[in-house]
Length: 497
Ligand code: BES
Ligand code: MN
Ligand code: ZN
Image: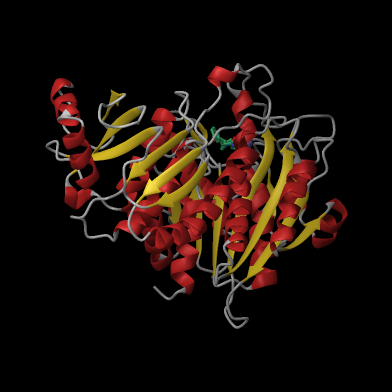
């Protein structure tokens, strides 16, 4: 679907989306169509009975008289003072999803509201963004889909004044959308297609956008002393990789922010094998790395004036006669030893080495890691907030605000020395699991032992990387969680906001 911007007028073909404020008030274009059609829109609103103009509500008017339109979709947008950029984005997503598969090829959506605080061209750009995000599909393996089941919508024109400004603003957002799709694709791909080598290849493709990419193979990782990461990988026939991606869009003097991603391309649990039911979900255990790769892609695609380095640890966690055993002791790159009591607590073992590596090599001003780290975070927060663990209040507050603005919400969780003691081992520096309870905090405390004094945040995205319900801008499936949040956080940080 292509998104364009055009002046506000009644199109002479296709579907048209119009906002309706709470209470049933139409915008200027809606009013003029209502007049032309002898009151068809207001009659439809009345006939619909309970349509109140609340956010997300829709009704359709087919073949409205006095126009050449095939249909008009009336979309509730709530109170005028609530019609902000997020609401415009949801409106775009709602409209495009509603008509995307109806047979309509061309559609227009009017953003002609006057009474809002935000300039209309910004709302228009965000509506286009929402439409793009909401109509994402992953079709790579459908070979038998009937044409009438395929999306029909090809062109969406957003109607607004200052269309050139809207177009320009949208162009940047669209690059972020492409990068979110890149992330969603990676997470959706099956684990026989995406494994460490192929995921490294996809990350390496960012070089064509100007990202400096290094792919470190097993021999290199061994030389670096990454015994903790290598222990996880040793049960699999797939060789592990660490990929380093650098984007320097700001002054050389500014230290980068390091983005670190867990990339377990399949987590069987290893010898501490997971139960069969639901094991297929563990293809998404590389979602943290996919979010980091997608963010780096977004930064490069829109030539962001920020310095960032992405580091992802790519391994497959499998049982075999070569696999690491419960009870093994491994030595991490930091020199700290780890008693591996459960091979299914593998994400932290991977992150331990790449957090340390990123800190030592890049001396970042901050480190943010993303990981589908614990099932326990789903128990605590469900699917609507990711867990935020941090040693720094300022970083936490900035990330939380960025998440709020982008609809990728974070909830800060506690940490503390009492929890840290729970991972002391009897025979090594630490063990990779604690006792009962507080499993997500234990995971965070483990990571904290590898970050030194660097301001650091750990986002446990186990509950948010996959979406189980369609929303206006996130269809069911891989959400791409983290790309929007990090993209905004970095922009605001380097702009000094
Ligand atoms: N990848 C899983 C975490 C996970 C579980 C993500 C369910 C999404 C849904 C992680 O590697 C894991 O297995 N964690 C264990 C830790 C435990 C052994 C301490 C868990 O959560 O059960
Ligand atoms: Mn695991
Ligand atoms: Zn895992």
